Length: 187
Length: 266
Image (cartoon, rainbow over all chains, first blue to last red):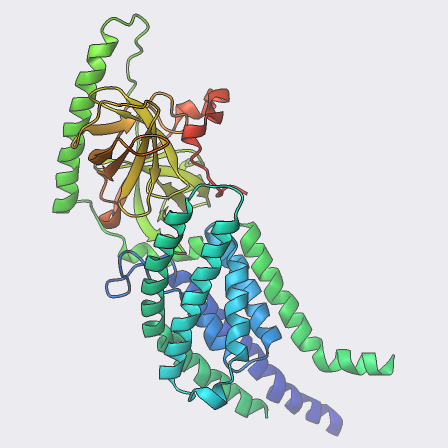
């Protein structure tokens, strides 16, 4: 009888927050996916919007292990592949971004605030577009010339980096607060 | 064995969650994100514009008529002595709201709010006030995705309406396309109207694409012209979807100049 009630309270202490956490996390991903096809006024530069999935991957990876970061990159990359086209794949760029973000020694170089998150996002957006451009360069089918790819890369990398870094806090701050809260609950 | 068991007990939750996440990822990739676009359309519904009454679009419409007229005049001249001239059957188009744009920066796509349940299928043509916009390559029950003419992987057989010189146009990612000619010295000038050619197997012949903006005859291997696409893709709110009877054509579609699918179809 007694052990049963202990089990119940354990259930409530561990499992309810876990399920809630999963729901909030998945919900935030869904939100990012749904904002992806929009181009609101003030959110676009030359027809290019922020890379919301990249922002999410950065926010997720900042305080997690490279493995977790890579997993997030794979899942979101697969989804974005489905939403656009499979070749070149978005999995690679998002995995690279996630792993790099989780490997940055933040405690040494960067403060943990949204300015540094904006900085990381800026760099990672450039990295991610470069990975895509490299894939285009190495792709066997030549629908774009090298010159086209790399001129376009400059435009995209810059606009996407500026916009993504400006909008990164809007994803990072609430998610970070939530994960902190959940961790303190579970501890 | 015991330590394996303990490891499993400790990490079971995370592994199951990781598998679940991967499963969702694979599912969404395999279904081409159809579920997400359906939800997106549902949420975007209240924000859809009521009518395409903007001044920009009206101007574009006028321009389209002007170009069509020019094209028809020129075509008429040619067809007068052809006996097997088939009359242009009028086709009813399906108006569709534009509900979103490409989900990444490298592809020039738009999302329309009509899908399989309205009879839309891959290969259908999308026309906007001003001219052709692109063709549909992916449908979900209530949405469809359009590969725009301005996408670099989109190629379409094109003709200079005035002089009937042919070539193919490929997108250059803004509101422009580059037309490469088959002839070494084509008769083309700034301001010429460009329409889809009869060699194009993804688009019916004679649809307006745009106007020539500049010409580079010295370009190698083939002379090039930069075309300004006449449909205002950036301010588009509605488009019209037409069935394409020509796709049944088959064999001629292997020609190099009109491989509009690019890498989009898996």
